[in-house]
Length: 317
Image (cartoon, rainbow, N blue to C red; front, top):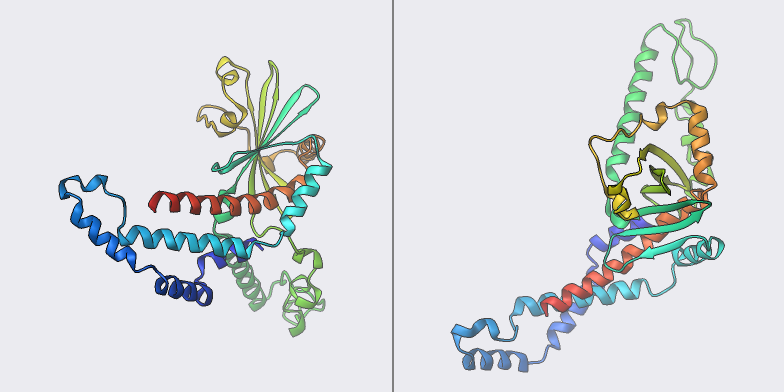
């Protein structure tokens, strides 16, 4: 859904926009041209900076921005599923306080848990992050695996990845044509869960800060994707006067090159990984939140885009 909306925004809407542009040009009052010429005659050239803005470029840009606002408002006039999902999350998780400032990319969620203050941070920047890079990487990896399989089948060694059992005289695994595609990749056998309506089309970066008085804080970086969190790193910020002067948002953004941030999370003992995931889960960093974050990014990005159009239009007109 999100990827389609981003593509539609970038693609030309030839039918509606060209029609509106023709109408607006045709119906433009003729007196504007006369008014521009009168002002240019009456106003001294040396004081041109004090004359009202009537240049064609400013007016055309303002009209185009206004047209964009109308189109976006019309296309999003019906309540989206994201809106209802967000309201459901807020009603079921009243312990989260949402801090969302208009014109700011970052969104904060705050709550208290025992003697801790938990802050979750994410940004609408991820909405506009191109996804083709990840898709291309996955395709390249699959191509490499296919080449490795084909090379293995050309020799006398055992073939990895073959599906049907039964060896040939050369020692290879016999692969039937219908089995050249893994079951999970066939359209008729694809898991329905892989195509759930409403799921986000992009992974979202999420940062979590868990603060305890006189103990410092834990800063955890995660990825929210398809309703699940994947921990990337966990670092401890020691208690200090400097830390106590910073807000949670500033602590999450602050990067220290000298602070040890721990090893890559996937290299930790599996039990440590599992217990860390449970630790976050009981603090509300769970599946419900992993689904909520991309939904909220979708709604906020659209709201901020409309606000940006309005502010730029007001400036140039």
